[in-house]
Amino acid sequence: QSALTQPRSVSGSPGQSVTISCTGTSSDVGGYNYVSWYQQHPGKAPKLMIYDVSKRPSGVPDRFSGSKSGNTASLTISGLQAEDEADYYCCSYAGTYTLVFGGGTKLTVL
Amino acid sequence: EVQLVESGGGLVQPGGSLRLSCIGSGFTFTSYSMNWVRQAPGKGLEWVSYINSNSRTIYYADSVKGRFTISRDNAKNSLYLQMNSLRDEDTAVYYCAREGGVGWELLVWGQGTLVTVSS
Image (cartoon, rainbow over all chains, first blue to last red; front, side, top):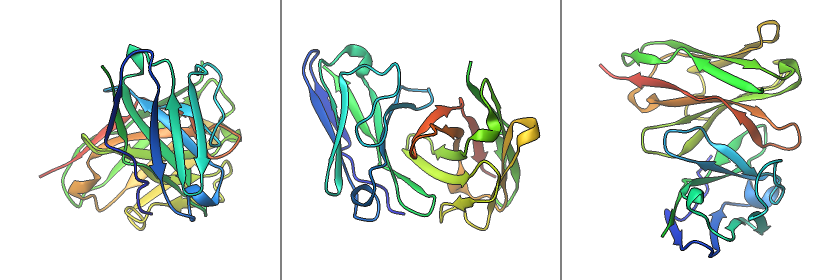
């Protein structure tokens, strides 16, 4: 149950696009199409932004998109806005009813 | 409104025990699997435990296996986490989270309850 690997930080200016990567193994990210992404603002609970690699829950702007290639999943945020500044966590099903999270990425909107 | 509310956190000495509770409202609690996820101060999220809707399937992270016990009482719309033999490294905000009902996503989260293990 090793954590998925994410960059510690990314940044972008308003209106730009940023991509956050999430690297796992064939036992988690690469083995299942059950990658989800969570946004967490300071002092708040996480919020689901993407599930099943690329699906958006109701209410999540279409500026947020997800994809996967092999053992690496990605979250892309286009048209960056100030309120997007937060920590982002990827999560993958890892088999036998277990989940594994990434270490988290701090997004700074410049 | 769909909601999860945790309680039971607090300060406990190493080796001690604590029981967390999570009450669900605004949805049919019996229809969903539930999870506990924790976050140490300044650290990332860590999945802790899973329980399916009828309590027949239960799993734990290796870090808590043998020390923590997840359970639920569907009649009370409640989820629990019994934590024994607590260690300093168990200090964290503990969140209960409900599945989305599609894959393995965690759609609904509580506000969290802080557990501090310290002498």
